[in-house]
Amino acid sequence: MELLERLVTVFAENGYFAVFIALLLCGAGVPLPEDITLVAGGVIAGLGYANVHRMFAVAMVGVLAGDSAMFLLGHHYGARIRQWRLVARLLTPERYAKVQQKFERYGNRLLFFARFLPGMRTAVYITAGSTHRVSFLRFFLLDGLAALISVPIWVYLGYFGADNHDWLAKWIRRGQNGLWVLFGIVIVVVLVLWWRHKRRTACASSDSR
Image (cartoon, rainbow, N blue to C red; front, side, top):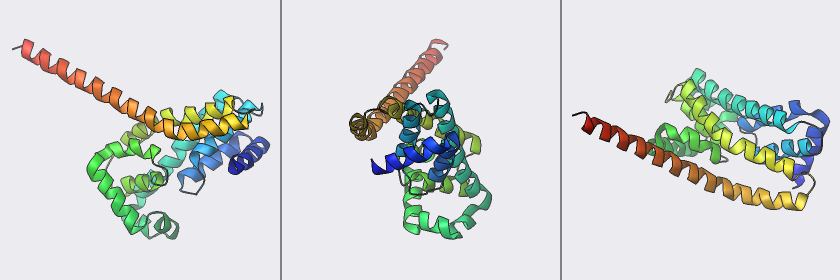
Protein backbone atom coordinates (compact mmCIF):
# COMPACT_ATOMS: atom_id res chain seq x y z
CA MET A 1 0.00 0.00 0.00
CA GLU A 2 3.01 2.30 0.33
CA LEU A 3 3.44 2.40 -3.45
CA LEU A 4 -0.28 3.06 -3.85
CA GLU A 5 -0.10 6.01 -1.47
CA ARG A 6 2.86 7.48 -3.33
CA LEU A 7 1.09 7.15 -6.66
CA VAL A 8 -2.09 8.70 -5.26
CA THR A 9 -0.07 11.71 -4.10
CA VAL A 10 1.62 12.16 -7.48
CA PHE A 11 -1.60 11.64 -9.43
CA ALA A 12 -3.60 13.99 -7.21
CA GLU A 13 -1.05 16.73 -7.85
CA ASN A 14 -0.70 16.15 -11.61
CA GLY A 15 -4.04 14.66 -12.69
CA TYR A 16 -4.82 12.62 -15.79
CA PHE A 17 -1.50 13.38 -17.49
CA ALA A 18 0.47 11.70 -14.70
CA VAL A 19 -1.73 8.60 -14.88
CA PHE A 20 -1.29 8.44 -18.65
CA ILE A 21 2.52 8.74 -18.44
CA ALA A 22 2.69 6.14 -15.66
CA LEU A 23 0.72 3.66 -17.78
CA LEU A 24 3.02 4.29 -20.74
CA LEU A 25 5.93 3.41 -18.47
CA CYS A 26 4.11 0.25 -17.37
CA GLY A 27 3.72 -0.71 -21.01
CA ALA A 28 7.43 -0.10 -21.60
CA GLY A 29 8.33 -2.68 -18.96
CA VAL A 30 9.25 -0.31 -16.15
CA PRO A 31 8.83 -2.22 -12.85
CA LEU A 32 5.67 -0.33 -11.91
CA PRO A 33 2.64 -2.59 -11.33
CA GLU A 34 -0.09 -1.70 -13.77
CA ASP A 35 -2.88 -2.84 -11.47
CA ILE A 36 -1.73 -0.59 -8.61
CA THR A 37 -1.31 2.32 -11.05
CA LEU A 38 -4.89 1.87 -12.27
CA VAL A 39 -6.20 1.60 -8.71
CA ALA A 40 -4.39 4.83 -7.80
CA GLY A 41 -6.09 6.56 -10.73
CA GLY A 42 -9.43 5.37 -9.42
CA VAL A 43 -8.60 6.51 -5.88
CA ILE A 44 -7.94 10.13 -6.89
CA ALA A 45 -11.28 10.08 -8.72
CA GLY A 46 -12.93 8.80 -5.56
CA LEU A 47 -11.27 11.59 -3.58
CA GLY A 48 -12.67 14.19 -5.96
CA TYR A 49 -9.53 15.07 -7.92
CA ALA A 50 -10.85 13.61 -11.18
CA ASN A 51 -13.93 12.20 -12.88
CA VAL A 52 -13.93 8.40 -12.67
CA HIS A 53 -15.38 7.85 -16.15
CA ARG A 54 -12.78 10.15 -17.70
CA MET A 55 -10.14 8.37 -15.66
CA PHE A 56 -11.29 5.05 -17.12
CA ALA A 57 -11.03 6.51 -20.63
CA VAL A 58 -7.56 7.94 -19.96
CA ALA A 59 -6.46 4.62 -18.46
CA MET A 60 -7.66 2.68 -21.51
CA VAL A 61 -5.83 5.03 -23.87
CA GLY A 62 -2.67 4.89 -21.74
CA VAL A 63 -2.70 1.10 -21.52
CA LEU A 64 -3.34 0.58 -25.22
CA ALA A 65 -0.84 3.25 -26.25
CA GLY A 66 1.90 1.69 -24.13
CA ASP A 67 1.20 -1.81 -25.41
CA SER A 68 0.94 -0.65 -29.02
CA ALA A 69 4.23 1.23 -28.79
CA MET A 70 6.05 -1.93 -27.74
CA PHE A 71 4.44 -3.97 -30.51
CA LEU A 72 5.20 -1.36 -33.19
CA LEU A 73 8.81 -0.93 -32.06
CA GLY A 74 9.27 -4.67 -32.35
CA HIS A 75 7.53 -4.71 -35.72
CA HIS A 76 9.67 -1.88 -37.10
CA TYR A 77 13.08 -2.99 -35.83
CA GLY A 78 12.55 -6.75 -35.96
CA ALA A 79 15.19 -8.93 -34.31
CA ARG A 80 17.52 -5.91 -34.00
CA ILE A 81 15.44 -4.59 -31.10
CA ARG A 82 16.73 -7.42 -28.92
CA GLN A 83 20.19 -5.86 -29.15
CA TRP A 84 19.04 -2.67 -27.45
CA ARG A 85 20.41 -2.55 -23.93
CA LEU A 86 17.10 -1.84 -22.19
CA VAL A 87 15.22 -4.41 -24.26
CA ALA A 88 17.97 -6.99 -23.72
CA ARG A 89 17.48 -6.67 -19.96
CA LEU A 90 13.74 -7.15 -20.32
CA LEU A 91 13.79 -9.76 -23.07
CA THR A 92 16.61 -12.10 -22.04
CA PRO A 93 17.35 -15.17 -24.22
CA GLU A 94 15.63 -17.35 -21.60
CA ARG A 95 12.52 -15.16 -21.53
CA TYR A 96 12.48 -14.92 -25.33
CA ALA A 97 12.56 -18.72 -25.58
CA LYS A 98 9.76 -18.95 -23.00
CA VAL A 99 7.61 -16.50 -24.95
CA GLN A 100 8.22 -18.46 -28.16
CA GLN A 101 7.10 -21.66 -26.42
CA LYS A 102 3.90 -19.95 -25.29
CA PHE A 103 3.24 -18.74 -28.82
CA GLU A 104 3.67 -22.29 -30.08
CA ARG A 105 1.17 -23.49 -27.50
CA TYR A 106 -1.44 -20.74 -27.61
CA GLY A 107 -0.84 -19.04 -30.97
CA ASN A 108 -2.01 -15.45 -31.33
CA ARG A 109 -4.39 -15.96 -28.41
CA LEU A 110 -1.34 -15.33 -26.23
CA LEU A 111 -1.75 -11.64 -27.05
CA PHE A 112 -5.05 -11.75 -25.16
CA PHE A 113 -3.70 -13.87 -22.31
CA ALA A 114 -0.62 -11.62 -21.93
CA ARG A 115 -2.61 -8.85 -20.26
CA PHE A 116 -3.11 -11.21 -17.31
CA LEU A 117 0.58 -12.20 -17.13
CA PRO A 118 2.46 -9.47 -15.20
CA GLY A 119 6.15 -9.57 -15.98
CA MET A 120 5.58 -11.25 -19.36
CA ARG A 121 3.28 -8.72 -21.02
CA THR A 122 5.88 -6.39 -22.57
CA ALA A 123 8.10 -9.27 -23.65
CA VAL A 124 5.16 -10.91 -25.43
CA TYR A 125 4.21 -7.71 -27.28
CA ILE A 126 7.77 -6.97 -28.42
CA THR A 127 8.23 -10.57 -29.55
CA ALA A 128 4.93 -10.59 -31.44
CA GLY A 129 5.91 -7.42 -33.25
CA SER A 130 9.50 -8.40 -34.03
CA THR A 131 8.57 -11.83 -35.38
CA HIS A 132 5.67 -10.43 -37.48
CA ARG A 133 3.40 -13.14 -36.11
CA VAL A 134 0.27 -11.02 -36.30
CA SER A 135 -0.99 -7.81 -37.87
CA PHE A 136 -1.22 -4.68 -35.77
CA LEU A 137 -5.01 -4.58 -36.14
CA ARG A 138 -5.41 -8.10 -34.78
CA PHE A 139 -3.00 -7.33 -31.94
CA PHE A 140 -4.90 -4.16 -31.06
CA LEU A 141 -8.26 -5.93 -31.02
CA LEU A 142 -7.03 -8.79 -28.83
CA ASP A 143 -5.23 -6.46 -26.43
CA GLY A 144 -8.21 -4.10 -26.36
CA LEU A 145 -10.64 -6.88 -25.46
CA ALA A 146 -8.39 -7.99 -22.60
CA ALA A 147 -7.99 -4.39 -21.39
CA LEU A 148 -11.77 -3.99 -21.32
CA ILE A 149 -11.79 -6.72 -18.68
CA SER A 150 -8.89 -5.62 -16.49
CA VAL A 151 -8.83 -1.81 -16.68
CA PRO A 152 -12.36 -1.01 -15.42
CA ILE A 153 -12.02 -3.52 -12.58
CA TRP A 154 -8.97 -1.76 -11.14
CA VAL A 155 -10.06 1.83 -11.82
CA TYR A 156 -13.53 1.44 -10.31
CA LEU A 157 -12.17 -0.61 -7.42
CA GLY A 158 -9.94 2.34 -6.53
CA TYR A 159 -12.86 4.72 -6.92
CA PHE A 160 -15.19 2.84 -4.57
CA GLY A 161 -12.43 2.14 -2.03
CA ALA A 162 -10.89 5.61 -1.96
CA ASP A 163 -12.07 6.37 1.58
CA ASN A 164 -11.42 2.92 3.07
CA HIS A 165 -7.83 1.75 2.67
CA ASP A 166 -8.34 -1.47 4.63
CA TRP A 167 -11.27 -2.47 2.42
CA LEU A 168 -9.31 -1.44 -0.65
CA ALA A 169 -6.23 -3.45 0.32
CA LYS A 170 -8.39 -6.51 0.91
CA TRP A 171 -10.11 -6.20 -2.47
CA ILE A 172 -6.87 -5.54 -4.31
CA ARG A 173 -5.65 -8.92 -3.06
CA ARG A 174 -8.96 -10.54 -3.95
CA GLY A 175 -9.05 -8.75 -7.28
CA GLN A 176 -5.63 -10.06 -8.25
CA ASN A 177 -6.97 -13.56 -7.73
CA GLY A 178 -10.50 -12.84 -8.90
CA LEU A 179 -9.31 -11.44 -12.19
CA TRP A 180 -8.02 -14.89 -13.05
CA VAL A 181 -11.41 -16.35 -12.16
CA LEU A 182 -13.17 -13.78 -14.35
CA PHE A 183 -10.68 -14.48 -17.12
CA GLY A 184 -11.49 -18.19 -16.86
CA ILE A 185 -15.22 -17.48 -17.01
CA VAL A 186 -14.75 -15.37 -20.14
CA ILE A 187 -12.77 -18.16 -21.79
CA VAL A 188 -15.47 -20.72 -20.94
CA VAL A 189 -18.23 -18.44 -22.30
CA VAL A 190 -16.29 -17.86 -25.52
CA LEU A 191 -15.73 -21.59 -25.97
CA VAL A 192 -19.41 -22.37 -25.35
CA LEU A 193 -20.51 -19.71 -27.86
CA TRP A 194 -18.00 -21.00 -30.39
CA TRP A 195 -19.19 -24.60 -29.89
CA ARG A 196 -22.85 -23.59 -30.27
CA HIS A 197 -22.07 -21.63 -33.44
CA LYS A 198 -20.14 -24.58 -34.87
CA ARG A 199 -23.01 -26.94 -33.99
CA ARG A 200 -25.61 -24.68 -35.61
CA THR A 201 -23.45 -24.38 -38.74
CA ALA A 202 -23.12 -28.16 -38.92
CA CYS A 203 -26.89 -28.63 -38.47
CA ALA A 204 -27.66 -26.04 -41.14
CA SER A 205 -25.29 -27.77 -43.54
CA SER A 206 -26.90 -31.17 -42.94
CA ASP A 207 -30.44 -29.76 -43.37
CA SER A 208 -29.54 -28.19 -46.72
CA ARG A 209 -28.48 -31.53 -48.16
